[in-house]
Image (cartoon, helix red, strand yellow):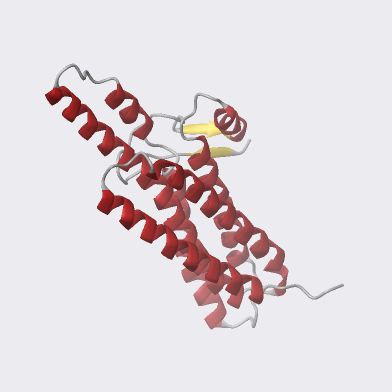
Length: 224
């Protein structure tokens, strides 16, 4: 049976909350379908991007390259090494405790002005941590698309369909994370942080679009 291995995330806030350390694909999809899962959208986006990365790894590992040269093989090995790091980090984004912290902050007492200030500060900290997760998925998806261009330039024609599907999955992962992040921005009160995130989203979106188009131009299949 296919098993999804999830390890604790190393950005923002991390924990074993959410998915267990090892879960079957069926259990993973069941968890995503649950109305009680606060990370459904981000987890689905990260998993889509991770699947796209897997297809790029598959393409990079095929025995035949575009020119069957040592340079091609060396470049593909280098791309594969980088893609494995990206994939591991995408998997890590599935596990966070941000929802728990947001929930805990909202339950803090607010009887006095001091308590209200403490509650709002804790809530904003948790909300920023929650926003960092989809932003990281976007960054990683864009990074994978960068390596996808290298893979597409060096791989044989046989890898074209895998690379095309990989790009589609990475774009879906990117867009899913972007939609989730944009829905969180209205809850943040830090104007400078929010403006910085909006700039990051715009830049990453432009980068991802440009990279995806470049890859697609390299792997366009001839018309039948």
